[in-house]
Image (tube, rainbow, N blue to C red; front, side, top):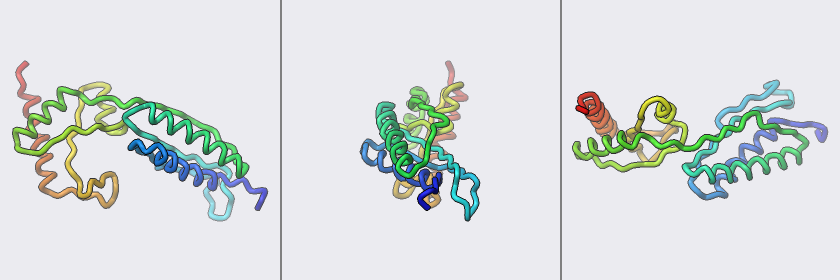
Length: 181
């Protein structure tokens, strides 16, 4: 047993370390270790290789850098403690782009005209609208989920909230296609 170099054990430590470092920062960052592949992926063979895709998000790039730097140092140390080597295959740092201010203003005005409560929220990289924003102006319309739970199988949004979000979307699109410049 002492000669084993279990890559999956190191991956498990790294995953836990990610969440510890994010919580330690206490800055409202989001993180995930949402994808893992293991080789040879056999139930009775010690994993010789494990790949984990990690992501850390925050609106302030300095927070992401601080967490990332601590995380990488920590997992290098912890992997070394159990005799496992690690390497970083890709390290992509993306800044949090802003959504189209005119689009946000239009959505807020439409929501107000329809009598809907509305607020602006900061979002961080990951939404499709942010990728689209590279080519054309983009904005997002969120509807409230019960208990604020999102990106989760237990997420639930009341039909009335969906109807209001739909009405805001339709009216926003109508304004966009009928606007006279």
